[in-house]
Image 1 (tube, rainbow over the protein chains, first blue to last red):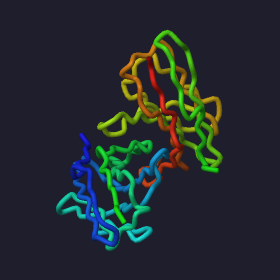
Image 2 (image 1 turned 60 degrees about the horizontal axis):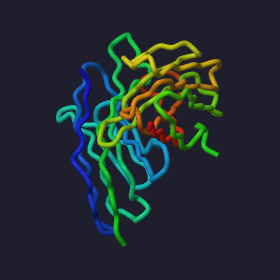
Image 3 (image 1 turned 30 degrees about the horizontal axis):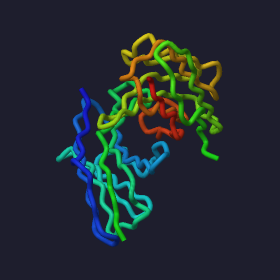
Length: 117
Length: 114
């Protein structure tokens, strides 16, 4: 079956530090990969996505590259801000050849990020 | 205003109560979803509706009953819940059910079962 594994949190950084949150996946078909972010008291928001191998998703200074050879989709940001404090979820949507996935996302367990001034 | 609106934001109910969660999307999407978010567990997909037809029921207990009267509205009817059902229930929508179609989430209903 499909699965997503994220690095254990919580992650605590100082402002302007470099961020990496690791994500690896297992999928049986042709997955698209996503990073979602959840700010306190809110639902999840799509941060970025990549739909095929070697694609790079980017948004708000965050980047992640779809690495099929290592089945990874690590999230990076060069300089974090206090406002980046949130929970980050890696997810995949798998589609077997000739089929659909009905938007069925498989999520990782989430990584809490706290950025201090 | 978020494109996906959930009400109520918070709900406390006893195990013998009957209540309903409501979700409305203003994005013109064709698919809607219920997810359950429990502490320290990955999000769990509960139900998927595509054009008002249920296309997935992810082994959810019958005490949770979804209803999708049209493509803009989704309900989750609750009855005789258990304390372990306490969680954040998230509604989401997407333009279609293709795997590249990202989900748009509401802010969730925080449910506490006493």
